[in-house]
Length: 323
Ligand SMILES: [Zn+2]
Image (tube, rainbow, N blue to C red; front, side, top):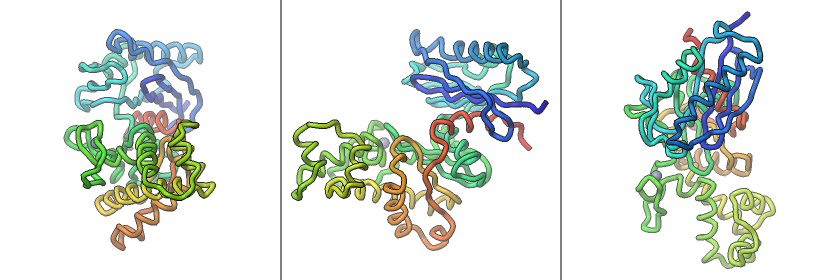
């Protein structure tokens, strides 16, 4: 029987786990709750126990597997397989994630960060179509990114490569403060919360009639990035202006990525990407005006296709034996 892979996508509320073939077909998928109590000390144990239980239930032994690939928040030390600074897991201090999970399951463990595994998943089985050069942008509560270049994940000296969310795009005095301590980061504008902030700001000086403006000023409806895109689709003038505003900054940041790395694809994923073409088309327009010709002809932008499965797929890819 051909050997299989296990992918784990660890997040603040659940860890998604899957058993996959080496071709990226998901055969089993389940999740365990992330118990971040007691400084997150139960998390790895719970994941390991759950994998052991599943393999017992399916009557599969360890020889069936190449190993476990796992994506995690926080800062990873790729030499020691340790993780620290994952505050949503209560992992402030260094955790021996790889050695602990290996000792519980008896399987080899390969780690990478959560934005990078999503990049790898999309590159492997999604919109990246197996290309050797892909950049992945995720637009959710924050803005993250991952670089897959010349067939490898690019980490940088401290694992911080690809942090597109913290590219400074607004250098004006009015630029928003970012959680990272800087001002004017892409994340302050193009994350789900950033989009709402932009809408509230632009509403202040907006004259024409607008449902979005009324909703903001009267507090009748919760303002979300989804509502803004829905109203833009109904031709609401303020909503259209907000979408154009954030797409300009996304196009600008993507143009820097394009001019710098010339990937075959820049893939946009995360919750906000559900807006589809309404997000993609204006970004493409701005992008094309800001990249030089060789990049314009060879780097394209598209929307992610895998949704929530990108993480377990990319994680499992880490466990593939190198060719
Ligand atoms: Zn920042």
